Length: 408
Image 1 (tube, one colour):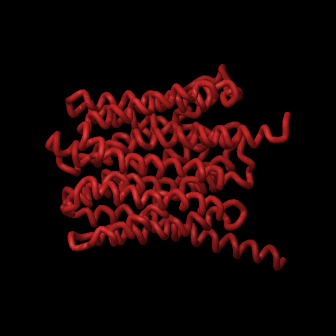
Image 2: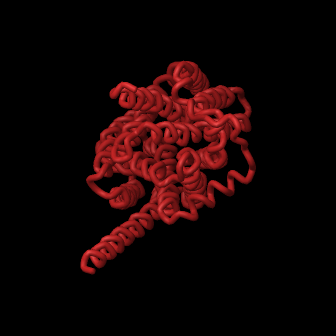
Image 3: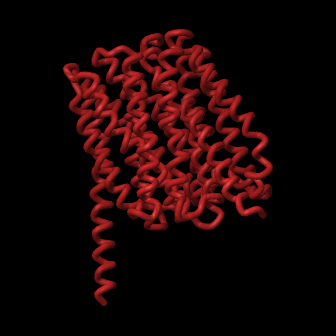
C-alpha cells in the first residue's frame, strides 16, 4: 500500500463527510431559520416552534439509538445517503399544506439528519489517527456552522423570492442531489459493512446500557444532553427573538449567520487544543461554563439592545454552544468498544437528542407561562452550568489522585 494512501483516504472521507454534514444541517435547520415566515403564513404562535423542534428531537433520539446496526449492515456511507434522501423528502412534505404534515416532516427530517453524525463518526474513526482525532472530528463538525451560515443567508433571501415553501423544496432537492454524488465512494468506504448484521428492538436498550455502564461515556452522555439541548434552543429561537425585538428577518438572519462564522475557527481551535495539548474533559468544562455565561446574557436581551451588542452575545454562544462537537465526538469514538464507534456515538448523541427534545419544550412552556424569552434561555442554560461544575470537580479530583500517586 503506498505510504500516502491512508492520508488520501482520510482527506477524501473528511471532505465527503464535511459536505454531507453541511447539507444535513441546512435541511434540518432551514425550517427554524425561516420560522417567522412559516408562523406568519400559517397563523401560529411562536411557542408552537418548540413543539416542532421537540418532535424532531424525539425522532432523532430514536434514530440514533437504532442506527448502529444499520450502519454495520449497510455501511456508513450508504446510511449517509439514506439520511439525506429522507431529509429531502421530509422538507418537500412540509410544503404539502396541512399543519400535521409540517409536523410529520419535522419527525422525518429530525430522524434522518440525526443519522448523519454516527455514520460520519464511524468512518472518521476508521481513518483518523487516534492522537489527531479531536482535530479531525472538529474539522468535520465545522460543517454544522457552515450549514447554518448558508441557511441563515440563503433561507431569508429565498423566502423573500420564492416563499417559504419554495425555499424548503430547494433545500430538499440539494440534499437529494448530494446523496447521489456520494455513490462512487461506497466501494471503498463501505468495505467494512457486515451484511449479516441483524436489527433487533433490544438494540435500543443495549445501546443506552452500553454508554451508561462506562463512567467516561456516561459523563459524555450527560454533557451531550446539556450541550445539544442548549444548541437546539439557540438555533431554533435566536432569529425569532430578534424579529420579535423589532428587527427584520433578513437582518436577524444576517446576525445569526455572522455569528456562525465564529463557530468554524472555534471548533477547530477546541479540537486542536484537545489533541494532546489539554485534556478533552478540561476543554469541555471551559465550553460548558462559557455556554452558561452566554445564555445568561441572552436572557437579558431587550428592545434597547443594538444589533452589534446582540451580535457579540451571539458570538460568545457560537464559540461555545456551537463548537463543542469535535471534542466530545472524538472522545466517544475513542472510548467506544472495537467496531462499535457508530453505535457508541449514537448512544451518546441520543442523550443529546433527549436534551434537544426536553429543553425546547421547557423553553416553550416558559414562553407560554411568562411571555418572556429571557426566562427560557436562563432555564435552558442551567444544565450546562451543572455540567461545567461537575467536570471542574472531576478534573480537580483526577489531578489530586494523580499527585497522590506520584508522591507514593
